[in-house]
Every structure is written in structure tokens, then in C-alpha cells.
Image 1 (cartoon, rainbow, N blue to C red):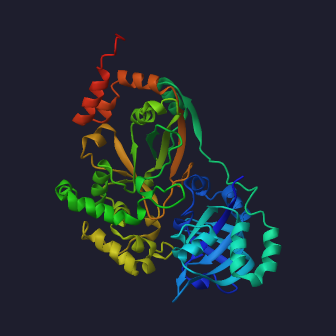
Image 2: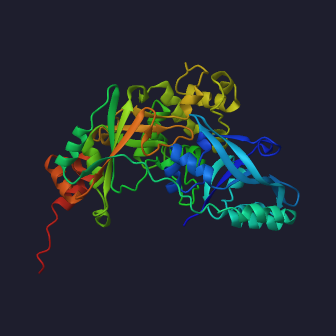
Length: 456
């Protein structure tokens, strides 16, 4: 059975040192460097998730400090309790069982190996859930602090190393299973629409796919694939193909175009047309034909639906112009006035003013950490044909399986994909109409009119 432990790190050593035992972490730093499958089981931070966090061992550490011939960090071992969650922060009481004090290591690789974490984690404020045996970590630290052997033996011997406690199951809400267009629409009709909401859809050919924009995807070990280089990705594409973006008035327009050409962005494509989403849920390689697909249904409150020229959209989109270091210095827990006096807020304002000269220096920090639905200009044929819109993810934003305030999520499992594709073809929903570019039309026609071998 897999074992887990909390790894909580702060850049400010005072947050770890001393007698204080109340810790707080920005929601945006929760579950960084955590395996994606575990993160999705915890990111709602509901009662079951909080209970899991309180039951597993915890290492509370400072970020690493470089000395002349070695590196060092403060390390404590214990448990957390009394976890409270709000929109911006997660707070908890840390109960110290072993205080290792300042521990020296030969280099940061040795420190990371001893703690069972990724080498970049020792430099970053965050809260991760790591796979591994806490008692083995205690044993490695004990070799560096032999004077604590007795207490490590007592506390470590009584620890379960995180075994016997597993993350709660995924909390997906299903409307049912569809094996035809008729049954699919029937399930949607049975799901009553809510007042003052708009409905959008997204199709996944594999129900195991996550609702995560390409920019925010992680490797299996929890490392970011693209986020630390977001600003560089955007600028390099603009440099290489500047003429393509001449007509784009806003940063959001550029992100839409970048998304269209396959660059990782903080946008997640959704559609106002359920049949388009159904087509995507069934479109797959032959080796995926028997794998269950999924159509995700989003009920979005009117307050979270914005247009391409919205000020909130400009604020979130221009996060893409900040460096990774600048994003890490965003403190969304500050009040409006204090936040807008910070250097990084002024940098963000500079980028916003480049597209909206009239914009006042009153960026709402709470908005920057949210997710909004944006109706884009239909500037390319694909957005037109797919009734396209986008979910725009703010700083540190994640979308739990059941949604969040203002975004309700349900799902329809899709099977019998070939039959459904044939039905959709008969009502003119096909690759030719969903992907109206000439190259996609040519591919579709090639497959549609291929003459099968007679066997001779």
C-alpha cells in the first residue's frame, strides 16, 4: 500500500523556527510537486481531503540556504491538525514531535534525496503530498543528527510512515452513460438547467484525461512541464511569427491564437454545442476505441462569464507576461490597496496598460486567483464551427472534479464511439465541419472515400 507524507516548505525561516505552531499556505501553492492523480483527489480540500492531510506525517522545512561549503535548512517532524480552508489560504496547527533544528547537507541534491523530494522543492515555498515512507526519511535525518537517535526511535517507531491512509476517491458526478446520440441528449435533457447560468461542454476521448490547461500540466512526479517558462514561450512565438498577431488587440486574443496553433497556454477550450463535445469524446485513434470517453458539462454562473474585452480578462491574461519569479511574488492575500503597491502588481499593471491605457491601478487580487469563462472573438473558422469559448485560469487556480463556486461540473460517460460518430456524420457533425480547414477536410474525405480491399 502506498505511503504518503506532507512536505511543507517556507522561504521565511521564521515561519519554521521558534515556538509558533500555526502555519498558513496560499491556495495557489497547495499540492505543487504532488502527483497529478493525488492532487485531483485533494484539490477540493473538502472534509475527506482535510482528514487525509491530518492523518499523514508532516515535515515542516525552511527553503534551503547556501553556505560556504555546504547547504542547510530548518527541519521539523510532526503532525498537523485543525486545518481550515478559505478562498485564499489553508491554515493549520503544526504539532512538533521532533525538532531537528538547522540541518547541514553537502549540497542541495543530498538534501532533496534525504527528504525524498524533488531537487527544486528545497528552493520553493509550497505544500506537497509526497509518496514515500516517512520513517525512512527520519532514519536518513537521524544519521545527520545522531544526538536525536532516541527521540527518533520513539517517535519514528510509533509512526506508520503514512501507510494505511489513502487519499479520498475522486468525486466526479455522473449523469449516466450514453451509447448513442439519442441517449446522450436524453441525459442532458434530464439534467435541469439552473437559472442565471450558461451551459458549456468539453469532450475527452479518454475519461481519465484531466480538466487542466496545457500550460498547467505536470509530469508524473508532480513537476511542472511548462509553467515556469510561460512568458518565454509566448514571447518566442511572437518573435518568430509577429505578423500573425498584428490584428490582435488584447493579450487574451493572442493567447487564443497561440492556443489554436498548439502553444501551451492557461486556456481550456470549451464549446456551447454539446454535439461538438460529443464528437471530441468519440474521436480517437483505433487503440482508444474501446476506452470510455467523457463529455463534461459546465454550468457557469452569469457572473463568471466574461467577454474578450473584460478588464478581469485582461488582468488574468497578462499574467502570461510575468516571469515565473514575478508570479511567485504575487501575494493574493493582501488587501486591494496593499497589493497594488507591490512591485509585481505594478509590473502587471504596466502590461495591462499596454492594451488598455485607461486602466486604473486597482487590480483585484482575489480575481487573479480565479477561473472565468470567456467568450472570444470568432476570428478563426475553428472557433466559429465549434461554438468555442474558453476557461481562463488565474494564478495558482485549479478546477476540482465537481467544480467550484460559480462553475458546477457534471459528466456523461461515452461508449460505443464508432456508432455515435456514424450518427453524428449523418447530421453533418464530422471532422470536416468541426475542423473546417482545408487540410482537415482533405483527411476526412480521404478516409470517407477510401475503397476497401477486395481481398484479391
